[in-house]
Image (cartoon, helix red, strand yellow):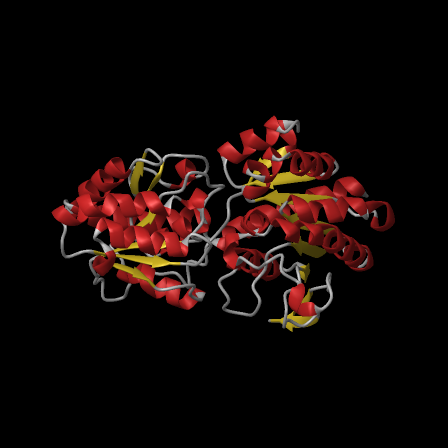
Length: 391
């Protein structure tokens, strides 16, 4: 069996943190005996074709000169963030889709199935289907439904692409419901969560933790980082020895730095930028708590990475987060509510015995529910069924 992965986000090199979960999905499927190749978005300075751990990765050019290929300008913040901050870059969507579609047409004929990550890649897969005649599976991560489908043009493209896919997978029950609301039959939509490499993300060997509250993610509005900062004055009055560490980058960074100064918490807040996966693992092993204060979330891969490191969670009670953060591994708080967030942190950290129980349960949940080998086996089974039906 050979599967072609199409994706608009993919690591630029091994160890890069951008969309690392897509690379992990590719590797996990390959470990199950599936031959895999990847078609991803090109960025300036990257080769158009290379092998990563024996897996062929093709990145077709879509704009000239190369330095003006800017659809990934906001990096990990994603395409919607780029379009909002740089509206003129929307003109690059059509040539990107054309390049993506033509490349898919050429490579898909060598494959048994196309697995498209996000609806934009799904559009390229179905647009070229009359030439390659291969079944198409689309995986939705959240932004392509929660954001793109809210714009008239985005909604039209999303319905066009997804209605022509053979099957759709989503990360959570909330995303399944939102996808069905676009007008797709719910029986066509299967829930398969993202995964985590539980052999890489592990608890600290010495069991020691620093007094760190950790956030990992983009600095964009929907991640709710400003509400986390608003919670810090109250929290630090009760726990003055703690500090907040923010890992990431994005268009709101300057505003967030200014906010920390105004709130008087800048000395206890560290903005340390975008980090590769190995460094993120190290920080998760050091932290007492990972916080994800999102206003909207398909699932949140960082939650799974924290679970695997035995790091308890405090997160917003929204969307796919509710599927991950159960009472035995962390606390859910109302979104955009700094006082509730500070109280959630206080309760979790004020009972060391309870924290230890949560840490053990977090690791168990990661291994039992989200290990990539378990997740990949679900995908491989789905591939087999789709290919059998198409013959």
